[in-house]
Image 1 (tube, rainbow, N blue to C red):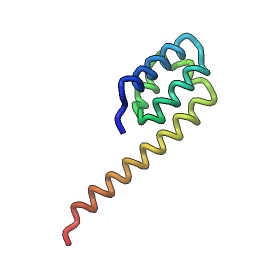
Image 2: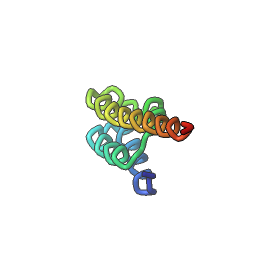
Image 3: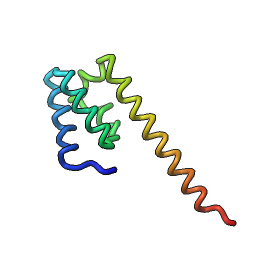
Image 4: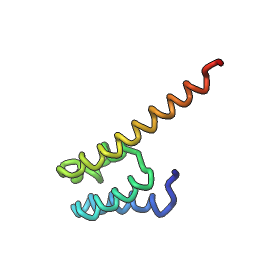
Length: 88
């Protein structure tokens, strides 16, 4: 599932909310983009905008849930690719 423009706007809203210290609103916006398929965890891990969230005890649990989902999708894709290369 791809992100639409509205979903990407939630990323920017989350960044702005987090940067100004509104963790509740930022986490809610991130939840929406995670649900829509956002998985640019490198941006979340390194952007100064999300610094306040990275120190919030709730953030790692929320992000980890989606990281596991992405890892599961990657494994499934690799297995499908490997299965398609099998010679019968």
